Amino acid sequence: MSRYMVNKLMWDVDRSDEALARFKEDPTVFLDDWESLAERPFPPYPDGGHLTDTERAAVESRDYGALYAMGVNPFLLWQFARSVSVPDELGIDGLITSFREAVAPHGYPDFYT
Amino acid sequence: MAEIVGVLGVTHNPLMWASLRETVPPDLAHVAANFDRLRSHVAGLRPDVIVLVASDHFHMFMMSNMPAFLIGKAPRMRAGHPNESRGFGLETTMVPGDPGLGAHLLGGPDLAPVFDFSFSDEPWIDHSFLVPLLLLTPDLDIPVVPVFSNCNAPPIPVAARFAALGSYLAEAIATFPSAQRVLLVGSGHLAHELGGPRQFLGVSPDPGFDEKAVSWMAEGDLEGAVAGTGFGRLTEAGNESYQFLNFITCLAATGGRQATMAEGTPTRFGNLPFFSWDMT
Image (tube, rainbow over all chains, first blue to last red; front, side, top):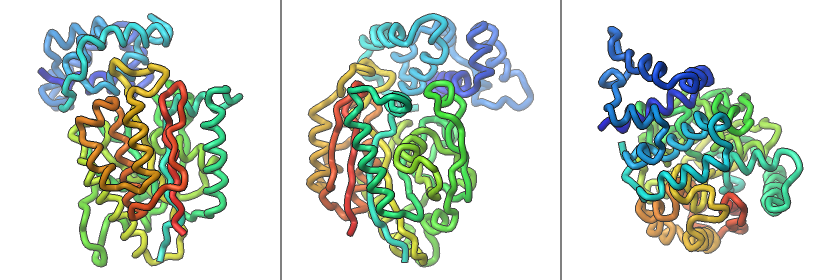
């Protein structure tokens, strides 16, 4: 489990308009590029920025409930969700409702990194 | 020597700020009135510098590099980040700083090193600093010394450290050889949640906590505030409630005085904090 790397991925996507546009266009391509940093001579991230298969699948499919249950940082998760899902997939009210339904079953997971 | 002329604790909710930009909606009329009142109060205090205690929200710092407490000492600093412009309409701007006071607060030969702060010569403040500044000092013309506290990435320093920070800041400001009038501002929340099951409920996620929190400030009950804000209790109040700790710093800086204004104003964003202490 690499909670930190999932946080870092969500942070990378949200903090840059350019990264956000690329992620929205094709999350698979974005994640391939992001993870390929591991192949470079000086990978910028610990473990080269690799996510586990489960983590990658949750990010790719925007499964906010699964990410929340893993213990990613809730603030980063919400920022990420709002940026990638609104307004293309959902309006803000729709996201608020579906996000709540997705995370509610998981209570308050430990989100220490 | 420099003198603390006033201490305030306010909300920095960026959605609230965005909602107040044009016509004030009826449910936020009282919030707008509180900010009007505090803006006049600040103008009357004629501060030369603002020491602002707030918590970066993964803009300046990430878990790759996360200081517990950091002081910014720069003559000017950027304020507002690109994703805050995208999310809240908060445009990036510049804010003047006070590197002399900032450096003094870090400690030196004449100050006992109570705190081992991190520091930054290039602080870039986010909405947790900028929203209070825009609402209290809209011209952004008063130099700011930003004090960053980590309230967003556990492990978060315990409440007693936030109290110690307040006592330290009061002592350190009082030993700064200048005639500056200093306004101390804390920025934070009452019970608040983001990214969890209780976000955007339209009401506070924990009104009982808010009531107690406001009474600690009204009564000047520093001991009660520290005892009542363990990590577990704050999480119960909501997973973003840790930023209440910045108000404990304010209370401690006053030496545990009763606040002259202590209010959790009910809004669609939950109860928004407004605290003010007279220091004269």
